[in-house]
Image (tube, rainbow, N blue to C red; front, side, top):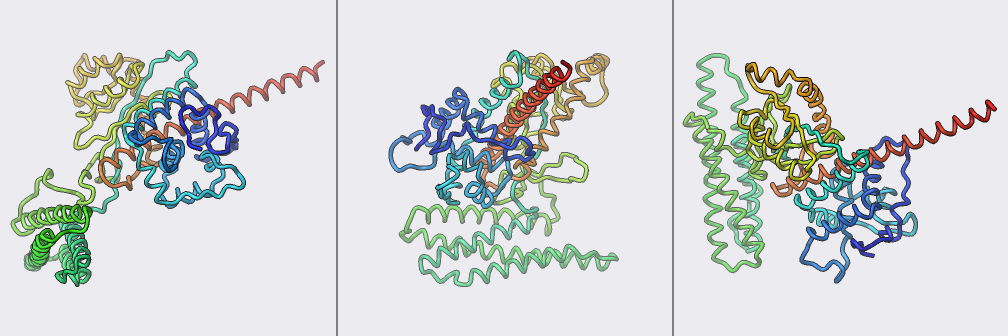
Length: 502
């Protein structure tokens, strides 16, 4: 049975999701996540909002009530949330949704006589349908649901804490010579396979060629590691380093030239499919990467130039990767992309932004505008010094009623008075709580993004934020139920005391 927004029976398949029971003593993440999902599904108004968004963004051009049945929208959403909130790879996720009892109940499967099996590729394909825009709108629905539970009057203003952190990309530590090897490896491998497909003998030994290139790279690496003790040996060692790099880039250049001529031959033939044409374009991109790295190695090692930072690429597979040094103790550099988040006083993440090649100072106004646009009651926010600039102080004050943004350097008399005010100091002391939210995100999936490409990176981050807020929603519901149980116990104890007294 396919789930639609008009389904009012609270059933997916044969299970009434509202009847799923969770262990109140459990401190594990899974019951909290599932409890949050249960609240979303069993609350009619929230469920309708979420399903309208899922139908709007997931394959909107397809009529989901006709044709061959696929995975239900609810299942796609649940599986995506579990993947991020539990920080699972697809292998572990595949095992859990096929074997964990309560997860299968949340997906709509009964306890008995149900052997439905989710295939790995089915999971990957369907979770990949989620988009950052969809997840951003669902996040607003989840946060508002949490606010309804927590706020007694529903008119409380929202006070935020803003900070940024780095989500690492799945890359190795970059040097110009190993980036050149990455490019050569892809060029040789892909060209060799194409030649095998079209019966060309130019690259019969392409596997051997890759091993030879790797040997030359290792020789260049090892020459740099040996330290010379006196000037004569030092000069000799520098000559050996230059020579090793020359040999490496000469061989690399030969392979790139040979690959280009092979591609010219292949393009003149009638290719079998569009995928082969796209593959040739991909090989050309790797050739361009290789030429850039050869140029930079030549300039750095042989000509003695310093390569400007803006010319460097830190991964040929994840070109959006940045070299970020935030000055943290014990962390010299992080390879990834900055993410900025705004958390409210109820520990829900109101808004986030994936920020490419911008400083904290440059993103302060945009992240605040985004949070204000999504939540009108967002009235104040605290930041750290990295977000400060005179311009930001002025622009933020027009957006918010109270801006807690410490200034850099020596303070003027007026600035001292502002920062010594009771409200400013109180908000500044509470600001460090945002680190707890960041740590929670990193534990639940945002330490490193395994997905490739900037689009998938943004989807991964957005899904992590939604999943974290759903877990927070489940934790709030659990706390509420525990308080209700405590009240019942106290009432029973008081009634028993009265009986004994009489």
